[in-house]
Image 1: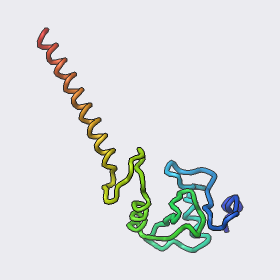
Image 2 (image 1 turned 90 degrees about the horizontal axis):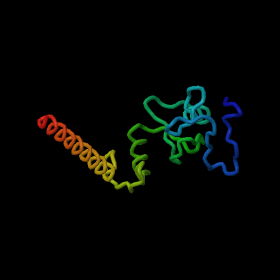
Image 3 (image 1 turned 90 degrees about the vertical axis):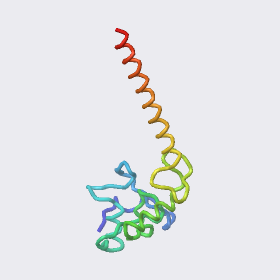
Length: 135
């Protein structure tokens, strides 16, 4: 049985997210005693997690542990759902369907930045080489 700390703070709407307010991982998942809160909630309220399946947040809120928002699915299904829900990359660019793992504009920006660093290094090397020859 889960302790009182695992119960939602407010239950105005039973369909709303139960947000974990204690420690969260850098990725936003609730963690208590080394256990992911959404996994513990699923086990306590729904039952055992079938072997090979992952717990998907149907609400897409990682800190949520409302068992009505959790579903055991394959890793592939979880990844597909996350991809369909994605609208913007980390830098705020609009995500385009069918895009690779990396955002196209971000990839182009990184490529431009990398090329600029390479060009600067080449200029510095040429300058040093010309100074050595002049001596």
